[in-house]
Length: 285
Image (cartoon, helix red, strand yellow):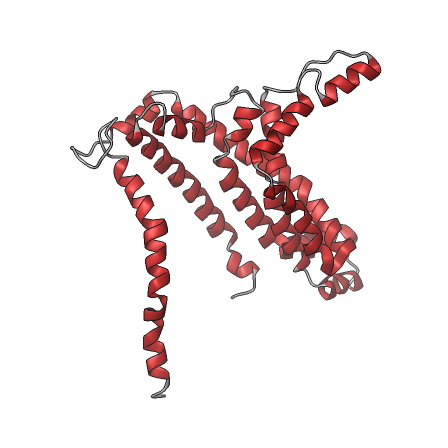
């Protein structure tokens, strides 16, 4: 027992570098942004009387509309990706078995190419007289209007960009379902639909939840899809934050927008985690 005590007391000391790194790299910037959101508008340092004017400005203007658009598009993106990726991940796990993780990694390869480059590729594909419409016009003589600069193409771009972030957790979650459990359900007389509903879906739910949360958090901050494919038909909240920090030179307003976005997204994520309780799904209790 005397030999164990020094090891236990050394635990906090060993974790001190990690704690300091998290404080310096994560907590400190957040505290700075939160503090700056209460500074007077168009100031560039901590000084003056703290004020709520920046938060009042957000709701007195139309900025909140950008926030609603970002949340709505992110939510729809998550739903569409869940409906698309679950069958794909399910088929990959069932067909390729233990090699499914390796096959899933192939979907990560596009992440090595800049998102803007990939989106400009789709721009050339959908543009008037581009790859798609130009081919249709030359082949069938149909002069169709471009799909670009619409809300639907923005959603398409977001779904395309965030496929890997939904597919990878889903494939891992589905692969966690034991074959013995599935076979036992069939032996007890369960139908194929009952096995999916009562066994496979609940046991793969952690992967689905993680994929949904990860995709939602990333999609809320999406900006390139609206700029490149949407022609700024919709102004996302990330664009307003960028404008506040750059062209408008109103850092406190940009900080207030960032804090508001963090609070809303953080509250939704915590609510989802509390509602679904990943610990119980993973069998930790």
